Length: 503
Image (cartoon, rainbow, N blue to C red):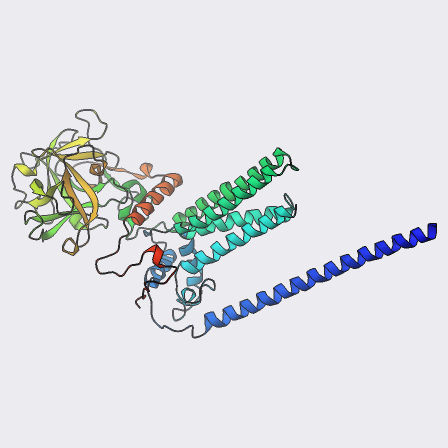
């Protein structure tokens, strides 16, 4: 009896060993099959991506933008773009490794076949999106197989969080993948909570683990990418004007970097006025007139985001020319602003603004600084006491028309081609309009001593937040140009309208 029982146990043990060996063999076969498929896909990818890679032999579509951005990273020149920096930073290091003849074609090998052949953000975005979904699937699989809290599980969670951060760091459209992973995670936590075989504490542990790896860690990484972006781009460029005066003071080569200017604003000073609207420009004028049908045919007044001499104004008392004595501009003063280049005064009258028809038109009027009573503005410092002196950079103020009782505002609306697609300036009867806040950025006056403005330079967090405000403002302002072929989202899945990308 004993020998027969032993033989039965041996048979059961042998059968179990055979089953384990069979399962192990199947797993090895499955792994080999997966590796062969993966190697085949990689080989086909290389062949399709590099076939005729020299065609086209010229810059196409958005390569114009991203190619230039690569060179700006090399030169450390600051620029403005509506997208987060990771995609452009990814282009930057590979950009400098290749000769100019091929730099527009071999700097990445991911994404769809056509997009992959150009310097664009989309292939990089697609790579990180796919990797994030892959990580989500692996975490879900390990959780179902009861491998939670293992080293492998933690690594895949961190990997997923990293890919999510990279996705949104390339383009804000990556938020859709963040939502996908978020909804999937909530569903998994709900199923874990409903499993009566597991304690509530397990659900809390899962929640804390995923919050750390899928929320906290991606946010830290996202901010780190912006830190690298701002450290690299520390020289002045053509995008300075989109940012506040304080932000610009951190850019080497900008007129505000380690700037020495008079601390107070005096009559007779030549100043530039920066609008406090997010992404707001400088008060600007030029010799061109408003066309017929858009109010009085007087000189155009706009805001312009780039720096030039047409942004300079001479600040004067309302009733006389500046004298030899130094007299400071104070809260509540009546002033005139004379455009330095054209010698015309900032002016408003009862004519409708060209774009915002509820506002009054603002123009340049007069000759050699001589105009009429409609050139007089009351300068009101925001949140200040009576007679408080206007300070360079730090003082916010409004300009209220003395006769029309309206405030000078930058509406943010783009003028047509006759206005060189600059931004409209008008006079709004709503005196509380925050688009009417201005500050003096440049202040040139030889009769006053200069002080250094480096103490007003903002830190990383302030610049990080302002960068996002400007990007969001820029995205909101992206509208199709007249005559441009566009499509609606519902048309995309069915290819209702095909867009051609110009060379």
